[in-house]
Image 1 (cartoon, helix red, strand yellow):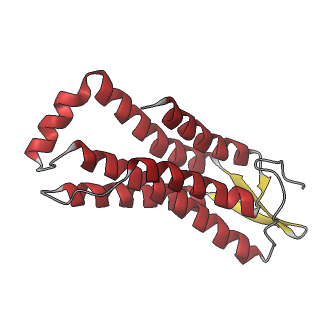
Image 2: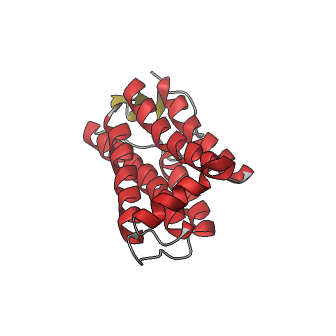
Length: 176
């Protein structure tokens, strides 16, 4: 992993850490993680290999990310405070979020520090044709995780009847 990838993952973990204390949901702090994830993904994802079981691996990555993201969103409480929606992540949300991000980081670290032969053996045994399929699976996992968590939080905020502010800074504490 590059320093940029490590920083992106640190930023994504920081999003949930900020929500542990509660924060007002804004358009900016809902959209920014999705935009950053899409921009980074566009730098690495230039196509998805579909030979062998590559597509199965990629779909499994996307589904895993979707489940983790939706679970993290569902485990985050969203309530109305005045006219604003305030999100507060709980322990389950934080664990699910960190499992997704941490799993990708640990896998990447392991592969670059001695795990590559084991991944190659697994890939041959399960008809995964290239490293690009693994990269695609993890990129799709990250995209789905961020998108589903954001979507669930947005829907929960709308359900409270609260408005989602436009101008508050990312991570600004909630006004309770």
